[in-house]
Image (cartoon, rainbow, N blue to C red; front, side, top):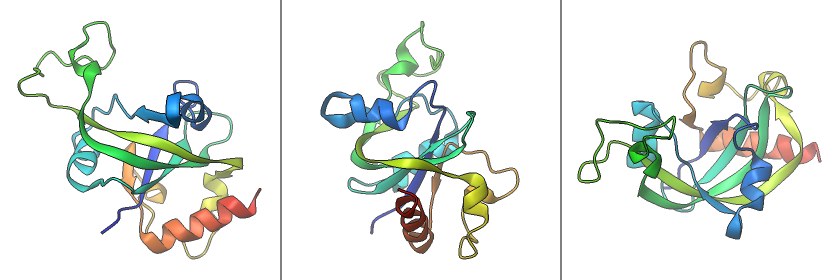
Amino acid sequence: MAGYWLFKTEPESFSINDLEKCPDKKEGWDGIRNYQARNYMRDDASVGDPVFIYHSSCKTIGIAGLAEITQTGLVDPTQFDPESKYFDPKSTPESPRWIMVELRHVETFDSVLSTQAIKSIDEIKQLPLLKRGHRLSIMPVDKNEFDILLEHARARQ
């Protein structure tokens, strides 16, 4: 059964446009250091699952594009790099704590579907993003709400 996802990123670090420019339009989604977000990627994400790329901590916060999971269960190499801000001294190659998925760019929307616009869509009731105190960088999205959000994002083009 396919999952539907929303992955947050700060566009000054890595944006939907950066993903589009990657070789083969693919990149590993590294640097996740929250156990619940890691568990979603490890236990629930599947190859072929669609992913909204959500830009945060920027001028226009919201859904900026669409990606697809192309690989799962990859070891996040940043956990072993002492120079990385994602270094984890308790993680070892024999027993890595952090995994990642690989994403492939599918579509960059002409304009960002802002959080404010998302809040104004009556049919969006379950989206974890809109729930108070929910700050996970990776979250599941209900299929029906995913379809509604995709329709709204594409209608803005």
